[in-house]
Image 1 (cartoon, helix red, strand yellow):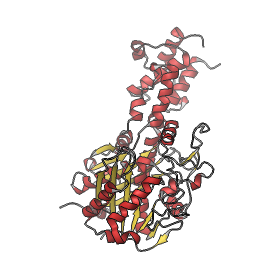
Image 2: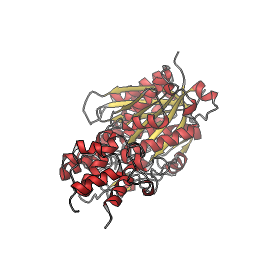
Image 3: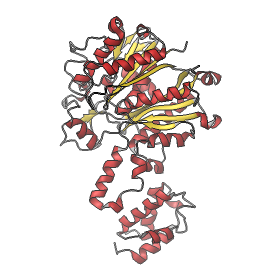
Length: 80
Length: 414
């Protein structure tokens, strides 16, 4: 089964239209991929859906990179 | 003094294809774009066919990148691709233009119906927290106008027009006036629509507005024929570049024709049924002629609204007779909805393109499927084959639910 990083990378790639090989844990959604506020909301929603996890608004604001998303999911996600 | 307005670029997305020249050849050849709907399962629907823009004739590839495609509804995708073709055709480089002198007025009858339906499903199945953040900016009817202004950096007049099936005609009328009255030099205008969806299809079908000729889709749109039984729901876009005459001449632009006049009116009668006497429709036509300062007898070709509904075609025929009197028997009339079906708020844009090509090529496109003329529809509808003739002046009619009527008159640049 794909790792959390791989699954997050897939979602980011699909959502923001970027090649997967350009996405690393350090990649910032806003600074590197040009995400706007709507993209960010949508991305969080996709992550919640994929990992069956609730990401509250205050936590979502702190998730600015791929690695931070993976960390949050590892700490808060269900086993799926 | 009013400034003169010419048309320098054309672009379309239709069930018959996307390149204007290719679609025009097919229209003249009498091909139908109407077929079984494949986008969703229609087995439970009264109607199984339409003018669907299938992926073998249109994709967003080369026009809209993956990310933007996800952020815009299908009607905006049509509008963006048709605009890109129209702008390319015009030869304009907007980077060299004063952005505040260039604008976009785009009609749509319904807006982002696909998005409304998709998000409604998410709301019901997954709850309010799963409704996309893009829902509103995708579904809003002005999304196409906004995205087209963004794409080309147009900072002049920019808005959407929503008058059901008259939307594109009213949009073009406004664009014409914007240039005439010196608010802009270039306007991207026309209409776009993508309402061939489960709600669109069932809603129109349950009004009994649609043809139910499920056994012969290509024969279903038969304007002015005695056997007509409703319109065929289609999708797509028709976008044109309007430009001030001297501005176009100065850059040596190819000119398809000049917009000479525009008239609009309301039936103020019933929300969906046309006035049987065609009074409001006649008023729009005569107002357009007056605005153009041309006599009715100067019109060589009328691209009719002609949706293939029993009431509408008859009312339009009555209206044409009222305005054109004896000339009504002489003028060539046709409805290219016979080939493409009804693109609703985009129909006027696509059909204005054909009206201009009739002017350019001196040929009137046919009304196909006109086998048994309805005695109440007794004009020269250019049945089944195109007619070559001198075409110096054309009229485009559009009428819509709500009782909106609009007519445009165009001619060769004098």
